[in-house]
Length: 266
Ligand SMILES: Cc1cc2nc3c(=O)[nH]c(=O)nc-3n(C[C@H](O)[C@H](O)[C@H](O)COP(=O)(O)OP(=O)(O)OC[C@H]3O[C@@H](n4cnc5c(N)ncnc54)[C@H](O)[C@@H]3O)c2cc1C
Image 1 (spheres, protein in one colour):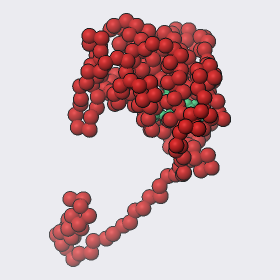
Image 2 (cartoon, protein in one colour; image 1 turned 45 degrees about the horizontal axis):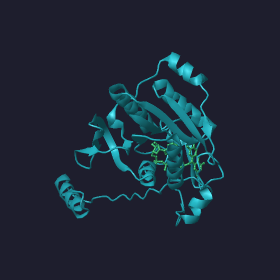
Image 3 (tube, rainbow, N blue to C red; image 1 turned 60 degrees about the vertical axis):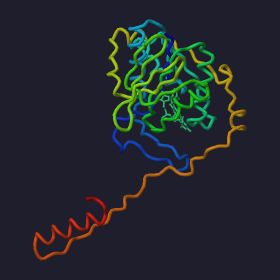
Image 4 (cartoon, rainbow, N blue to C red; image 1 turned 180 degrees about the vertical axis):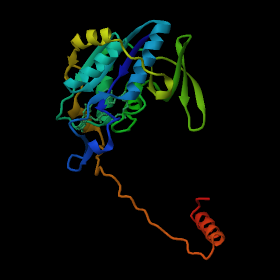
């Protein structure tokens, strides 16, 4: 089975909230310098899922990231875990990146990599929680997509996929090729050995320019109706405090219950 896993480098989501500020001018979340860039946690679940599929049915895993030079680190981590190949698409910082453009750029790189059975993405990126890129890649490539995947089983040239539904789980049979967005319930990503980490750390990760994958941002933007983020902000908490006036505790309890019922809390 040929599997491509898309990995995004994000600011460490475990860092304290106080280490993040919203830059209103650029409308971006800005982590402080002490916040390390790490692999998006859901993407490591996707890498682990790919390795388990390869262990069960054989095949090849290619990991892919669109990002600056530092994102080679998340690809090396995946190689240390067991991925066979890695490629970074060099992120031109002049491009106004968003989920739409990212999905198109990743799709162009996937076409350049060649024939595939599965593309695995994380269910969402920890810095934006957009959850759009995986489904976007499926739409651009014209293949099926299953989101919030919590289990994958190869079956007769297809895959049986369990997904997290609003209430309970769904089991789907999916023809290949397909894109799956992976949720954390699927597995616990393995920790690579120190030897594998050192070996992967020494590896040169090839990088492709946007031109080399045939991605034209000008063409895309000229055909796209557009989507503009108007504001990025933390909503101001609006809490009001109301006292229940009563002579006795029983009366207070009764009035409180009535008030909560009026507010549809009870
Ligand atoms: C290191 C880095 C710095 C960035 N800085 C800026 C910035 O300063 N200003 C700006 O406008 N934009 C920036 N971006 C781009 C912006 O975050 C994109 O909108 C983003 O890549 C699109 O993903 P999303 O957050 O919508 O992901 P989601 O849709 O939430 O991601 C779902 C899944 O898609 C895959 N995926 C998403 N993005 C990538 C990727 N880049 N490479 C590989 N797989 C991916 C992953 O599997 C991920 O789990 C940056 C991106 C990166 C990687």
